[in-house]
Amino acid sequence: MKALGCAMREEILSELKTITPEEQKILSGRAEIEKDLYMSSETNIIDAKKMLDAGKLIQVRTHTRFIHFPKHTHNYIEVIYMCSGSTHHVINGEDVILQQGEILFLNQKATQEIYPAGKDDIAVNFIILPEFFHYGLNMIGTEENMLRDFIVDCLRGENELSAYLHFKVSDVLPVQNLMENMIWSIIYKQPNKRSTNQVTMGLLFLQLMNYMDKLKTDGKSGRQKLILTVLSYIEEHYRDGELSELAESLHYDLYWLSKEVKKRTGRTYTELVQAKRLSQAAYMLNTTSMSVLDISMAVGYDNISYFHRLFQKKYGITPRKYRVSQKNLADGK
Image (tube, rainbow, N blue to C red):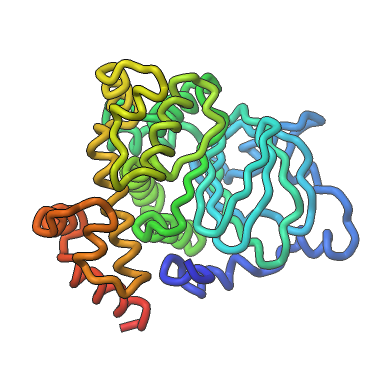
């Protein structure tokens, strides 16, 4: 993604880059955050009542730059989208670097510390009350996967599974567009924005479920760590990696591991591999001059007709037309 590129209009980025009164005080010499802006008492809990207007379930604000945020928790769910640059977080003692185009979901009970961000490090914080997620949760159904489990955990006010979910989805255009839509509607106070954004959040969940291979988490659960191992294996061996080989190397029964993958991700191992192959093919169509046949072979499909059918089913157009459409987008046509 190039300085937001197609994913966010320059108009929005220009708005988000504006130096706020709080940041101006910091630039003028203030050395610590103004706790009164964030917290209702002497605790280190950032309070939703301070961050949300009365009656609202969701609000967006830019992350305050130029200053260190000491360890704190929230009594709301925080979703952070990195518009440009990067930010350095420490979550429950673990370093997390959020890069441009990436998304970070934080559970209410996660302990967070943030190092000072620079002028061009633009992050948007979504301050969200748990009930906002009910609609999106209904949209993604009851099939168990790590994203759904995390949201249910948040709705219950628990922290049993993961403190955070870090989606490295800077190259996934539908996700970027959905984030832009939510930021746009909240900043520019679009009508019916609560309903619109609840639907948009549900669509975001559905998209992210297609890219569980791009998820990083603290993964407290042993089974979560196992699934992340499977997803990492797919990331590295999508061309020819077999679940049977992985099961053998990990000393798991193949049938049990197959069921666990389906239960935790909502998709079979074969479907996860297929999704990775097709997203890699789309990336190569957009960034290389390789022929469609060579790309098909490179991602693991020897039968180009089969590759064409799968690609068209996922993207709605042929690989060749996809390449042309991406070039036209880049050229502003």
